[in-house]
Image (cartoon, rainbow, N blue to C red):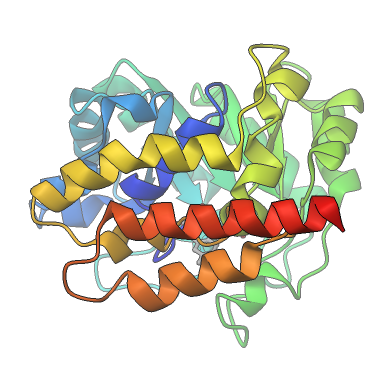
Length: 320
Ligand SMILES: Cc1cc2nc3c(=O)[nH]c(=O)nc-3n(C[C@H](O)[C@H](O)[C@H](O)COP(=O)(O)O)c2cc1C
């Protein structure tokens, strides 16, 4: 998620769940290919499995970006057809591509030809006055014909005129039934649903109802332990549960290394603020980190102090 997630966030999420597939925020193909911003591909080996999400609409440029992503070690390359941004100088990208299924198919085709890793698509159910019931099957059949075998559908339209990107994540109504109907129409296409999903109970319900995957965005960011700490066992039937406390301990050496490289504590702790959401001590945890992380010399001790406060608050809650 642009401006929210980054490699530090993914490292934290990976400590909470070994099995879930993590995605980068959208990286535009022009930034990689024309801008040479290869640092945008940097990631830690611990993040795997991790997909690189690309934005763009020029098949050859996307092919080159996919090649760079695959060479950098990403496990999947995903094409963004859901971001409700306006056209940019470098061409159309994101949700506006819902209007150009033929071009999307050309992009998928070129990306697949350029690299050996799987090429997937994230899309909306339509944009503006499109009729999702009509255009989504057409869109999906075009990308399937181009060799895409996995898609994530954000189950609402994007309104390209009149709504901000933030409003476009909440205001257009969710239509999960349509996603289920697409699974009926495309039984061999791996379909994940996205949008408004806030608990593993909901995730399980979608999987039980026949969908192949579920993507969780904002809830996984705001309350990562709630979504991720039990996902390996509950969703994948693998391994044992993790915990927010264990993830904090796991972050300490990573923080040390980041600071030794000249990084700042706040660049990492900003992703950790929601770790104890809804639990005793959550407020103290957030406060200590958000007030202290930007002070000169702040380091892992601050995180340890905040963790001790959480433990104390939990002792009090357990006693009371
Ligand atoms: C701050 C922010 C940035 C986002 N950036 C991206 C992005 O780069 N690529 C993408 O596919 N979706 C992006 N999204 C959309 C989410 O991936 C997701 O589709 C949307 O929030 C609905 O799912 P949710 O209700 O689980 O959050 C972003 C969402 C937010 C809140």
